[in-house]
Length: 361
Image 1 (cartoon, one colour):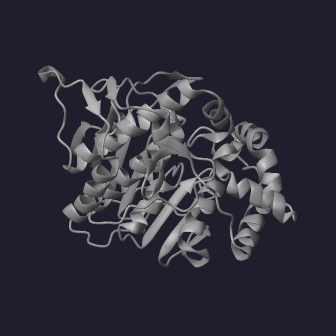
Image 2 (cartoon, helix red, strand yellow; image 1 turned 60 degrees about the vertical axis):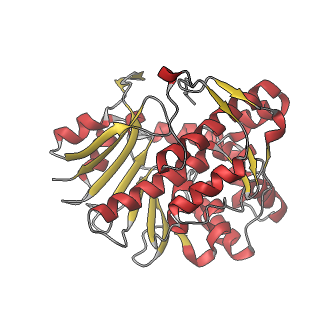
């Protein structure tokens, strides 16, 4: 998790007592049956990158086996400790980071700074907090009244932004409404921006598609903000924690695996998605993943955005070497396909990231 804390290197009032670990909940019986069926049906893709699947199977295998088995206790343990399991490794804590956080106070304060920085940046992005100026000697942030700060964000956005009920062993800042990680604040911002962009283009009830949904928090907050049709396109094992988070938040009928034409949240296997184009989606969103993909895969996603469709990208442009290829620069991929760039600016919540709004040709 890269962050140079370039504007706020010092925090007055930072302490371990501000943070804690969340409590998890289990799926209800119907949800557990649905998840078990999905995990049991999970098969390696018939693709040249099947070796990637082997890596995932090695990492996730034990947790997936518990979810696929008949032992309700073992499945429930995975569900309730979701963010301390390998299922969330790499995108929201996971087992190794959880172990470090539970044993190392310095690690907790390091991650705590990132979380608080995201909260303050979110307040700046929506206009409830003033942007600090390093040129004018503003290098400290005084930690006080965090609940008031978050409440002001809710008022500006116009939505109750309570976190999902599922927070099993998740480290975060303690607010009156629950435990919040940096991914909560990323999700709030991404959902808010996607809906505002759609409405700026005259789409009052947009259908949103996220490429690589990560923790699922953007989908969660988009629904809380009124989005009735949302889909996440992601790797099969990553859809599992997304289902646990979203099903426990919205109920069995609101979330399902595979394409769905009606309202709700669809969790779609990136290996098996069938539509030639993302024809049903007004805004396609990608946050922090297109640069890391193989160039052909990243380009294939852009090629599927429907003509005239909108694309919101919040990604870095480091173009560092990544195995046998350099990381992608989203603007280059879009430009090569004739996309029109309507807006480009530094990302509000992450130094070094770029936010862009494109329209497909």
